Length: 356
Image: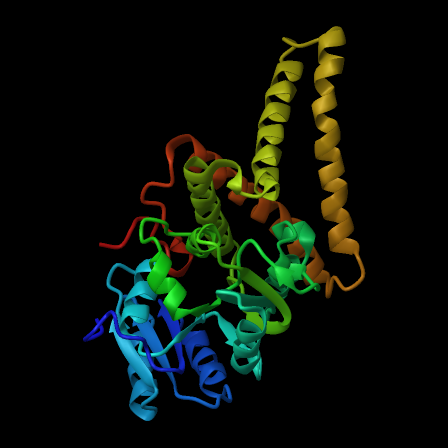
């Protein structure tokens, strides 16, 4: 904690990064932060979860080699808890959130500070440019960068600067955080959207600047991707329970797909068993039409120019419906019963339960 919480923090930049099982990515992520060219002082505060892959040891090695790196604990392993611990331990007037699965582009921080000053916004974000190494990860990255994959949020595919609903990662004025409060630790996913809602409700602006670019590395396997999207969908459902239609309409497309699939399966069973016949069966068969259109859409995305290698295109056929169905199933569960203790287990090996 600060010695005097009412004191105005000195000018400078505090990068904050929650970290859990990121040994393969952490060093590159940290380097992209430390290579940012800034006129004033800067620090990087890593909030370390209980990693099992050597990430914690690597973080200590990195901190020993650069006094700009500071370490705090995040034994709960929850992202908003780690972010808050890092923010509380930080010293400067601007908070820049970074992710261990991402790499900042050169000049990112300096450009963001200029945009904050130029627009008077409270929070500025840019484009999340997903990238991949393996055919699977490349397929996921392509869909992240496509409106078809993640629903067309500005920071996935936007090109026009202006006010936004939320911001990817975020470059935030510390005085605004002190005003509206830090991340809500009861929101395990979608915590950035919820914070930006409070920022906008307090009369401040959230700003999208497409000149800001962050490279994001998606999950490396199908199971991890499915787990990630299921948890994210569950927490979006929880946010719908809490905030209703303040959530954009695009969030309701994946659960609608899941409901259509469920109805279609029920109709198919009734038709195959002879319970549903005649005109009623013909009318009920109309439910297959939107699903057929969805199949055509998936095929079109996989075969479209820029789809990469044959293996990448084949992965696209599986990845796109996995993203939508996993997210939609999670969403429906979150709406009906709340997200409860749902966590993103995609970085916890085979673990599906909350960490102690």
